[in-house]
Amino acid sequence: MRSLVRETHLDPSDLILPVFFDANIDEVKYTGSMPGVPTYPLSGYGSIVDDILGSGVSSVIVFGVPKKKDAVGSDAYSDDGVVQQATRGLKGALDGRELLVITDLCMCEYTDHGHCGVLREDGDVDNDATIELYGRIAVSQARAGADIVAPSGMMDGQIDAIRTALDAEGFDDVPIMAYSAKYQSAYYGPFRDIACSAPACGCGARKDRATYQMDPANRREALRETATDLDEGADIVMVKPAGPYLDIIRETADAFPVPLCAYQVSGEYAMIKAAAANGWIDEGRIMMESLVGIKRAGADMIITYFAKDAARMLRGE
Ligand code: PBG
Ligand code: ZN
Image (tube, rainbow, N blue to C red; front, top):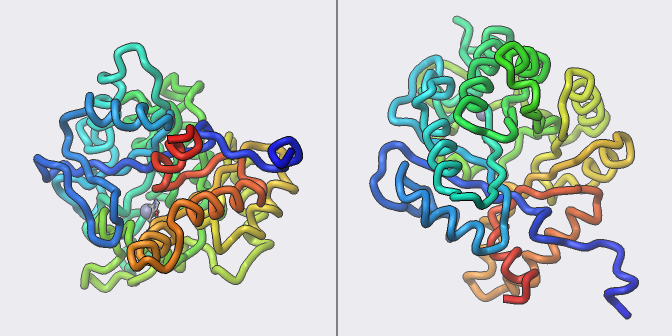
């Protein structure tokens, strides 16, 4: 009876797993602040794909740590970049099976200063020079086989620039998942441990992303950012982080009849893992409650580091 009257259902097909590749390693590596989240070398794609699909997850979002970071993040738009190689590797290992590959599209993992774009002389991000490079990143990711590109840099006009660049190269069928309402959040800390992407280089640039990511205190601004992205051609929009921004998810879902993704970020995951490791909470139940809460708030899909565990649990394993 309870399942008949249940209002919100989670399904493995709702979940997107973040997957990290590092061009500098030969063996799988783990990061202290993200227990259970592997960083893969650019090899062994067969077993990576087996592991993901075997859990019941069928979508991933790919992040990369490049061999070399530089001022303009050139690995991000190189056809031989870490994400491009990983995308080709994953797709090449499928052998008839299906895995949706979304590529995160940003520059902070590739720049030596850790910002999401190129810098002007005064140390602030050069918005318009950056979105031009985003167009090049999108094209190289699409060429590598990405099914969806997901710009996360929060530059103004980025969706329009990416759509235009993709269309010009014949990739008009590659959709854009826009990180539309992305807050300047301390919850990204553990991610930056994995990607070594904290904005801090001693080069005089700002040590935070406040000039492009959103103030956690704002809600109207989230709706405006989302409306702008949709105007520019976004196909899927996103709220990030998820748990501390359930009100934003609800308002976005009510305001726009489009697919909505929510990103349960690294800090949300790490807090649950840490408390569970101490025996203070029931990890499985908290994991499911956090995910169902995000869906109940209005998300259609969730990017979560729990994707494999949650999918297995949903399938009764
Ligand atoms: C890149 C990007 C970040 C995350 C996703 N894409 C980091 C950031 O903005 O610093 C964070 C994801 C997480 O914390 O799990 N811009
Ligand atoms: Zn970034």
